[in-house]
Image 1 (cartoon, rainbow, N blue to C red):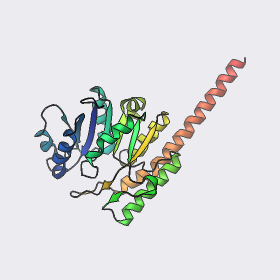
Image 2: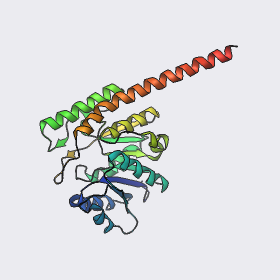
Image 3: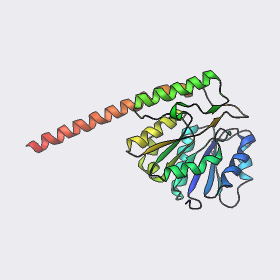
Image 4: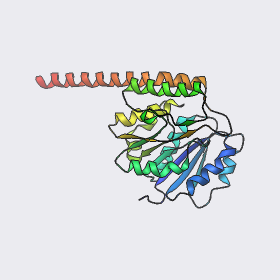
Amino acid sequence: MLLMNSVLVITPTFNEKVNIAHIVRSVVNQPGFDILVVDDASPDGTASVVRGMMHGGRIALIERSGKLGLGTAYIEGFKWGLERGYDYFVEMDADGSHDPSVLPRFIEEIGRGYDLVIGSRYMGGAISVVGWNFRRLLLSKFGNFYASRILGLGLSDLTSGFRCYSRKALQCIDLNGIRSNGYSFQIEMAYAVDAARLRISELPIIFYERASGSSKMSKKIIREAVLVPWKLRLRRIAGMQGRSVARKKYSKEISY
């Protein structure tokens, strides 16, 4: 059973004035779920909408100085929630792509002993995406297959931004060492949880293309997503070689 104020939903925003009020209400209408909006100085006044809804202590807002990126927004949100004692941390978009009614399912799944639960659009070979054209769908599907194979994670949707972490997972990760800032942030975080030898699960969701506003996808974000899996794999190989050298040195020293 959920404890009141035990779950923090973190929602980064940039120009989401049209969508944010509905998202905030949909989250706090569910017992046990609070929301933190991390706004990157949206010129459309997103932050002012959130400020007008802040009452009762279940809605919080971090206003940042500019467009600093998805990854840093989540890291800042994680640290904010850890300091305030939250047990579970949900990433959720502000554009209506993620259905807030699914939130309790994440907590049910993580309660089965997982430390990261990813909402997957591609479980069991299915494609649960509404509103994407074939090119966008192919790019996403191939990108997930590509990253999962390179890192050996065996997950169907590494780039999904609808997911839940346990407090333990975030405490085991060096949040200051996470370097990715676009969609590859999701890849790096899943890799870090796996590297910490924690359990990861996926549950099926339906992803809806935003009804209003503009997508944050860019060529820079795509390039980062292509390169990051290789950087992580090379980092892992270097770490394994470093540990091997250390073991050899230790064995040599004790042999005397």
